[in-house]
Length: 429
Image (cartoon, rainbow, N blue to C red; front, side, top):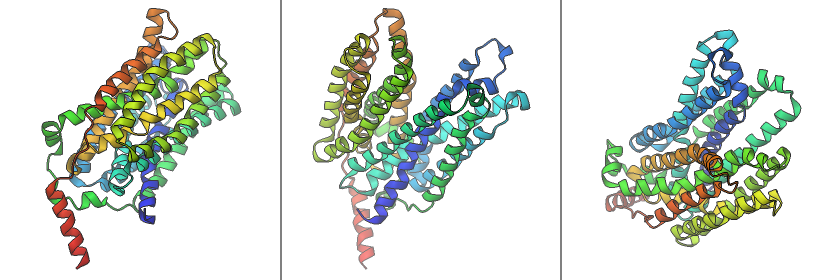
């Protein structure tokens, strides 16, 4: 890769990282945010109201992905990527300085809801935009470049987790509720503004710039009419990536506490999971460039389905150390997580790629991240069987495995190739 291409991937990787950091920080401090913005006289637990705002942010992501994907195909990747970073960063920064209910009354939770909605809408295009930039920057190794994007995502998750632990260790519970939770949003907002400044140096991707004659005024209509099968395949493939995060990061802490594991032990084990996942994604992503990507992804779905029962049975019966189990989980999860995004992007032609990737990924990830912890908790309560969460992973793995048989790489269309050749000929002249 050229120096310009390396810089493009580095800047694009901040998109997915910013998305994960902002959303995870809200989840970590949901209880503190609820006590600041929601009165206790409503009769509804403040934590429930805070998690409702969190859920609204997740639900708005698919809508944002669809809208931003459409603009990305009609007006360019660069414009959408820059605009979403600015709006999301300002929203995050404003959440950090928003006065509490005691100061502003009902206007405070209303503004919190609006800012969270705007944040979710914009972040719906962040990770898909980074994936599209990676695929359209260097066609020789798109899988490895997508892997770099997801390494940044997991490092941001590790940073958010570490910040939460530091806050809980340094500050008292009263200080966390009063001002500690704001630090994460202020940091995320400032980093987001820095990302916005860096993205202004990005150029439009070469492949999109050369495909002027192939663009559509209504790419969503073209996507639904001509590429509905790849769209559903991509959404189904994204389920497993979201399920692994929802189960091992979102659901596992509360579940493992019931199994008599220490909080610090759980936190250190999850850190092992994130480090293993980030390190192995580069390997599995590169393997997808050397081998048929759908085969590598399919292997990941099979291993995930086989490993999940082992993980939860071993954890329930204390057969193995928790860090070792999470380390193995990170290695297994990296196979599907390192290949699914690039495989989805390659199923769509350049004229509807942003719309296809944004819609498919947001539908699959939002559904699995939002529903898998709830489904796992329901199974444990209903079946009274502690390894029951493995059934959720097995189901998502089976759906993703079936989707892998529909992963077919889209060939470049003749009109796009002709435009590309004409552009190169003009450059030589």
